Amino acid sequence: MILCCWVPDWPVLSVGRPAEVPVAVVAGGLVVACSASARARGVRRRMRVRVAQSRCSDLLLVDRDVEREVRLFEPVVRRLERDAVPQLEVLRPGLVAMGARGPARYWGGLPQAAERLVQVVAEVGYPAQVGAAETLFAAALAVRRPSGVLVPAGATASFLSPFPVTVLGRGTLTDLLMQVGIATLGDLAALPASRIQARFGSQGVSAQCTALGLEVRPISARGTEEHQVAVEFEEPETRVDALVFGALGLADRLHGQLEASGLVCARVEVRVDLADQRSLTRLWRHEGRLSALALAERVRGQVRAWAEGGDLDTATPAAGVTALVLRPAGLSAAIGTQTALFGGQSSPVELERAAARVQALLGHHAVVRQQVGGGRGPGERVTRIPFGDVPARRLPEGPWPGRLPAPHPATVFETPLAAQLLDAAGRSVRVSGRVVLSAPPIRLGVQGFEGAVVTGWAGPWPVLEGWWDRDTTRRVARVQVTTAAGRAWLVLVQDGRWWAEAHYG
Image 1 (cartoon, rainbow, N blue to C red):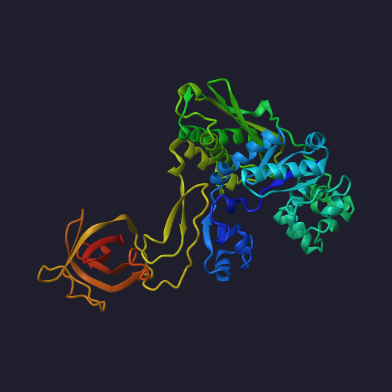
Image 2: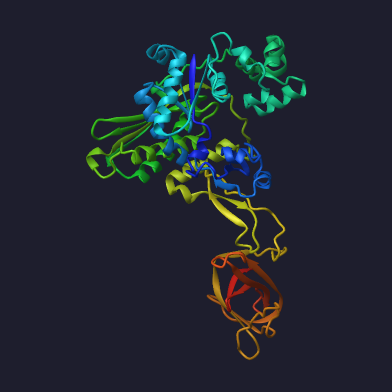
């Protein structure tokens, strides 16, 4: 039997807002978790952000921060280990799993052990509920039922039977099962095993074992020595940033080593050896492939949690870190993805590993990706996000009154350059309240470029942003200008001053 202890809505609780404030934690444009007050207004998990906002106009949106969730959940895990069960696994922030046999014997039975877990978490200040079943998959579903469910031995298959096949989390297989009329785990379990093998292959057989409650994965705090990786420090390291930096490269090394052996891991033990002969360990589990990026994210949060909790004394070199070790557990054969030969596109796994390797060498912000969102100016529409970070919430695409149409500038300056747009008398051209130029522009000067005669212009296009807030309101007007030097510029005027925002090549 396996016990799961769950703190509901942990991503929301980690934000630290009052219960009456409707909060939604978002990632990738979807709601990951929401508060009880938001659910009362119709907000649900996996709902698109725009739909959630339409149902709750005062909904507070917070981008998900897994590192923050890990750091804040560490005191709960530590308290459970001290007062309830000595060995457990963290599936994700807010959810832990453990073997039920030991706690049930010690506390006088499974119901008493579950009650003790809830009590310990309540002492830390959070609500919790407990579920139990013969497999981790079933236990993770049982804990999410109202008040948690303790599934008796031998009843796991009947408990799983009414759940839809979508809970398997296997997208392609799930779609195929539903297309042929297999809607629930009970339907899947009832099919002949030979037919499953012939029609759906090894993944179908594995899914049927899960539906039958036969997928037993023991909960263990032991890792595999053969494939562990470590980084040792010549002098005891006390800087948290240096430890986090080392963890990024270490996670990539671990996955490279496992990949060479044709393996993937579901659990990883993170261990820190200290100069005072102490060691700190934490076991993280992930159902499925624990990618290098996901692992580095968890290690980052774990190291910072130990530092903030006082386990790492960052002020005393004698108590610094001498080694950081990652030990994989729960190894299985890699099904793998077929990569392209002869110059084809790289697989997502290869791209992820390459990005993690560069970040380990040059820093977290060395590899970024661009996200296009809302905005009026060309520099406002693109956001750079460090690879692996949660994407920023997308702004709506429109309407955006005042946005410039295509063609778009070839170069957008990170910081606008000071400019002068002059008329025939040598005075600065002004834009009136009716959005009319005071005189035809004759000459344009831009910082770092030679002044040139204006050969044509278009505009101005006015933009008034944040008019409802006196402190943040912004009023500008943009003008497109061509010059005799062969350049075309996008300039804007704000508070009587001209700036070159971009040029068209």
